[in-house]
Image (cartoon, rainbow, N blue to C red; front, side):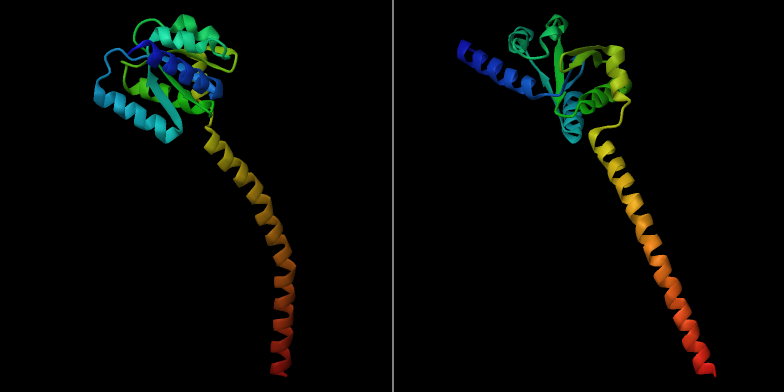
Length: 172
């Protein structure tokens, strides 16, 4: 990779990191290609990205972003996971690391808040953005269903009274 290509990578990564809501830093030593592809696929499904980068280039890209304090974590075979959803990269990394001990979560950050490995694990236990949206819709939908039921009940009772009156008139 020549100097111009490296500069383009740093600029692109800087833009990406500025847009990300959360960044998770991991060691991936020992993961084979199949495992890496599986992890990347799970990240895409969750709406996140997983990227192996050169440590020196990432350190340069971190300058001017809220994630600058993460620079000290970039030693050895490091990869980053990032997303607009704060929970998605943490949840995917932690779940994958539970099944595959070759992936080690080092830490991460949400904006300017630096997280250690335990904090990332706590973050992973929170519901994802999609799960929260589903719960909110369910909460909003439940009262509307109850209101519709309450409004329909008197009309149903009135219809039963009229039907009973019609039947009694016909019988007479």
